[in-house]
Image (tube, rainbow, N blue to C red):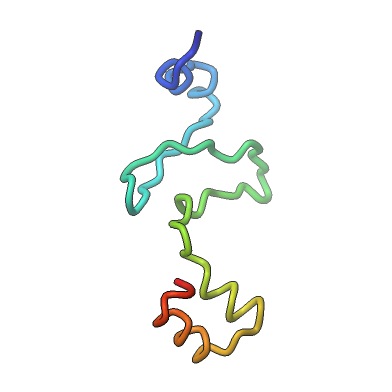
Length: 82
C-alpha cells in the first residue's frame, strides 16, 4: 500500500521533476503536480498556488459577466459576494 510520503519520494517522479512546491497563502509551502509536458519552444510554468475561495469572484462578476463595478462593491458590502 502507498501513502503520500512514498509517492512524494518516488525516484522516477522526482527524476522527472514531477513535483513543484509553491507557497500557498494559507497552507504555506504545498506540493503540486508540475506540468506534465515539457516543450522546448513553449516550456510553460506553474504561475502560482491554488486560489483561495472567492479570489476571482470580482473578476468574474465585473469582467466576464459585465456587472457594474459600483454594483459589485454594494453587493460586497452587503456580504452577497466577496
